[in-house]
Amino acid sequence: MKMNYFVFGTNNMEKAVSFYDAFFAASKVNKVHAQGRMTLWANEDFMFAVAEPFDGKDATNGNGTMLGLNLNSSDEVSQLYQKALTLGGKSEGEPAIRSGRFSAYVRDLDNNKICLFE
Image (cartoon, rainbow, N blue to C red):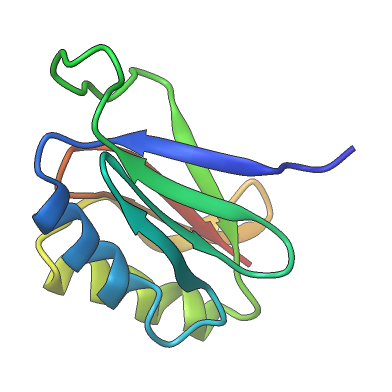
């Protein structure tokens, strides 16, 4: 079994799409769908989307909910962490060794938490 996709809710599709377009720009994760209430990026291993909630209510970030992205090097972790901050994201933990792995934590513009690790 493997992860198929992950979706973060958003209250501002335009800003969320701009953030993730730039966030994924140097990777092999490409936008494959942008229609209606959902925008989707994918590569050969997984899909990621931002969506306006189907029920029409405000999107909220879950306490304890987190997307983990496995990167190829500690340099890539640090670079993507800095890029997220430059794009308006917030730090939740600077790049460092945690539990034996090099990792960093950021929140996107809707306050969703992302772990970047090698």
